Length: 180
Image (cartoon, rainbow, N blue to C red; front, top):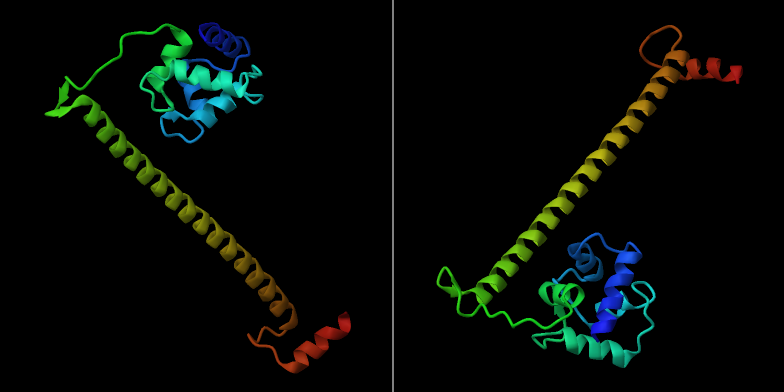
């Protein structure tokens, strides 16, 4: 498994797939949930990714080897450990450390949820702003078309209203039509 991890790292670097660990993790985290699930890992190791031609059981074995907390996915820490250290380190435990009276592991989850909610809120605001700008652009274009139509109608009206009366009668239209 360690040899496979080193091969993955070397191939990613050699092929210019990543500039940094963060780039690689972000690229492979297609769901953008901060974890690489089994499918994301398979895609990363498959033809669209590193392309190592690993079997299903080799990939499962690799995930089991790297997944230190045995949750079936790789978080950023596990990913970095796997690719750039390749050796087991002592398991980090944050339950002893507190943040505002809450164990750090719980505080990190809570902050993560708050950050995710904030990101969704910002995304929604951006989408609304883009929709508003698109509507404004559409309205401006519509007004420009209406203005051009009015200008053309006015030009035709002025041609037919030769006497500059400010109105057109049937006789004016009949005198204009023979020209066509």
